[in-house]
Amino acid sequence: MAGSETKTAGAAHRWHGRGTGLLSAILLIAVATITAHAQTREEKVRKDREKVEAEGFWIYNDLPAGFEKAKSTGKPLLVVLRCIPCEECVKLDDELVDRDPVIRPLLERFVCVRQVSTNGLDLGLFQFDTDQSFAVFLLNADGTIYGRFGTRSHRTDWLFDVSLPGLARALEGALELHAGYPGNREQLAGKRGAPLEFGSPEKYPSLKDRYQSTLATTGNVVKSCIHCHQIGDAQRQLYREKGQPIPESILFPYPHPKSLGLILDPEQRSTVRTVAAGSLAEDAGFRPGDEIVSLAGQPLVSIADVQWVLQRTPAEGGTLEAEVRTGDARRTLQWTLPKGWRRAGDLSWRASAWGLRRMTTGGMRLIAADEAIRKELKIAPEEMALEVEYMGQYGEHAAAKRAGFLVDDVLISVDGQTDLRRESDLFRYAVTARKPGDRLRVELVRGGKRMTLELPQQK
Image (cartoon, rainbow, N blue to C red):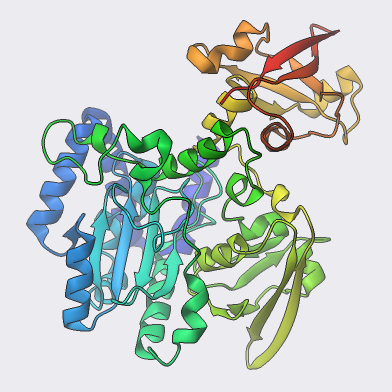
């Protein structure tokens, strides 16, 4: 708790610099969290709709109406994809955003749409990291994307990914791009991606028979909702069902800049805070204080825009041109990403990791063994030592349990490989090199004794 309090205090200074504003934000978060425990998910969704529609500022779950209003008013469009039951998102939910004295006037210059489900969502237009449950799109009424906002690199710790000042900077950036439109249309073309496998979530085979293209308005609303993470789950399942390797662009989606050594300031659009020594970012010449004006020719309004460019970069690697500004000085950098660069990303925090655990580890959650365990077992730092932290108990998530694995087992090799040092590394190996129905030969240590078990691979 002391560590959490320290983080919160640090965040206070970074977020507002306005004591009363921060206190109100903290109180709102606390109230929302307490209330959440007293409400079912169904109640939260229904109350959210009632409140939003009563206030009348946001268009609720009606994208066509939002686009029509943007066309008629000439305003840009702001679309928030927001999972109602997600407690982490409350930090940037409308209870805070709508009341912020800086952000509220900026929001009034947009047509604002609150989208609480992805049923029927146009996946040719709305492409984002589906392991998030708060994502913002800033668009023209004709579908041109000015930018994205919303970044996540941890299940609950959001302090270095998003902030209210950062959201304000993103809104200002989008308004600047809107003022220059359509003269900048060509520069913005890369902000839209190629079509996905299916045009909307409910068309994916694993979702097709369970969901409709619209959210239910009566009955059980929550059960009718396709959550963001289910899109990514459906993509991975598509390849798994076919017995094909899951592409690294889908397995390691929307790489976070920090995985490449580039730590950006969450209060700015895309300004470098620090650069990790020996990293690909340092090799490219990024320096603290650099403002990345454009990357791969695209103007940036937030960290999420940097992630979008990285998402479009092949796993085989490539070179991205970055225009940076420090004070009045500008320079151009060449950021070279080698083959396999995506693999530096961490998958363990993602909601999608549970689907990968079902497929590959039989429901086990694995963590890197600490130094004491490594020393006791005489395992070198560069060698594999993954400790079983949690064991699934039911259904397909109990496959490892049925195979004889136990909590506190330490996995030291898989199919003879000893370099799978992270849970993410094991995920990658299993879904790219092996198929459902295969069995991994796992060597482990239990109670000081070595033994070998077989771990079944599942769809």
